[in-house]
Length: 385
Image (cartoon, rainbow, N blue to C red):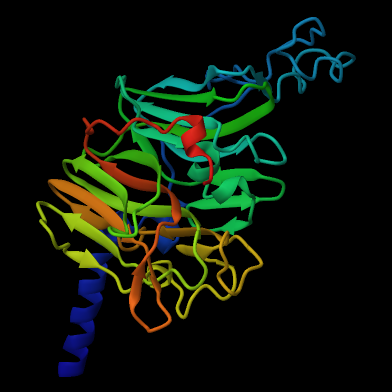
């Protein structure tokens, strides 16, 4: 009888915990058990070059016009007329900004697919995404397109994770949920001196109520080089308010020979001073590996995806690393700072501080308003050292 009572108690506890687990992990972590549930108060929408407003019944309305340079496939559709593939992509002039999404809420973005050049060199860091929620003046997301989609060093590598998927050739997908209550605006800026001949996108979203406790999605890019006498790089700082940290992408170039991944990732939470509340045991440990990065891997939540052909950790070795805190978000209520140490070894088995090149993208949710971001590095300062 005691065993029966214990089993019943366990079943009740699990049933009560299930909604909380789903709220914390989301469909990507636990499997979308609600896929069969109907949603009478929610509608599916998409913005794309063929329906830039996302309005109901307004897709593929362009008539072929070979004289209009904006209608890139007019010639191909000239014998078919209206309703066919006339504007599947756009061209972006140098030093210009285009709007990809500009819709009223409430709603939530569920999936973004984007493609530009088949080779992201000199394109990825020059192309900047900015997301604005509910009419805010400064963006909640400000990241070069390559780093936003976990492509480091402007070099494509396959990513097959829960939140980001990159497929050949340079096709970029993300599945971060992005709720908005009043308005959503997404822009794309070409900071280069040359025209971008192709930009295409599909942003799938749903219109409908947003839970009161849902936070706003944020992402911030940084690029820097720590000093050997203080080998610490800041991934994120200055975040204020209630929120949860959900992901790190690191584009890391070694500037010294030898293993350089002894540094620990530290989370300073809610007023921590000199010492953090959460600290790991090494760089490769944080990204889900051990004994160095001996091979590439891409899993649901951790990845080392760029095959740099340098098992000996030479100068110039490049790493593209992601860690999604989806089942295990870092919760904060007042403030947050995230750092990583840049540590290697001397031949006498003592740590040595390094000055490697780091470019990072931090992903988190929080209440608005958000604190001001540091200025986005110039295009020259975004480049690899």
